[in-house]
Image (cartoon, rainbow, N blue to C red; front, top):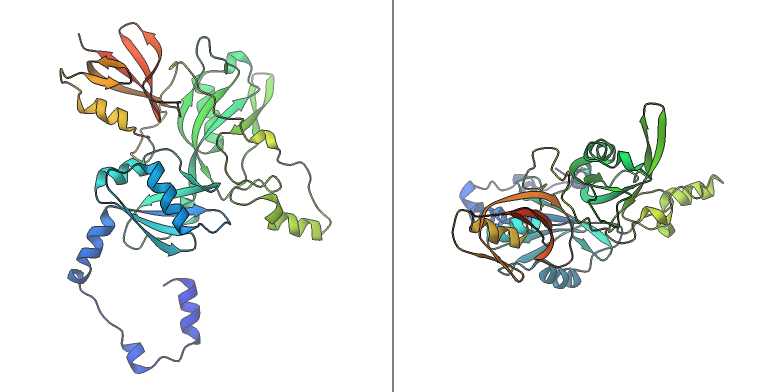
Length: 334
């Protein structure tokens, strides 16, 4: 039982009927289990209490589910999202990092007895820009090693020819929200040693005093305690940690997932799903104004692009397209 319930029961003098209890059979919960199997457990991570009606309106808009879904308030900023089909559920779960009212939405599949989020589950995927690298260090392998310092590595993006963001790397990592954000780290090669800055894209409610996500500096308990002890620390976290808008890389050079991905790691866009349905067919696939016949699809990286179906480059008989959620190669059918 939960700690709060146990503490309450210790105060009670239970009657005979209260003590007796009720024993359920598996058949009694069949309908409930069926509903939950296509559901997600979500948590709005932060100090602000989520407005239920506002959450319903916002998520109905941004999730674009094929069928309507139900939201149940579980308390403590946690919710259950019950979908009518597995496709809508997986689309939301494997999509981008969702936010509401300046706070991250944590999501996981429902499992019996696993309705609460543990501290180990309070993580989100973030694009992190790595700045101050010498030009010859801007490559896949340095990005992979640096990203592992920040969190679980999911992807590395390296700028290509003609890119106006060619002075940095980008990594997609799983960040633990219970730990202060890393501001950077030292990188060394032989006798050469450099400090590199980390800048976080789409960073939500963040404390520039303690470095934690989920509250602002005005409501920071650490700062309140430090000030009362005359031990305030100034300038530890600054505005530059917040990347000034996403930087869109325009080349697929060295893009790949460093580890075998799981469905929860790899964003899947509706466009990619439509393309996948036609793999091996002679049916044309419509992407934007282009019509192509494809033999295979290769996911080459994650990028929150602007618009769908924008042609951003050509590689021989391959065209590179940028979707809303990820980049992929379309190989022409011979």
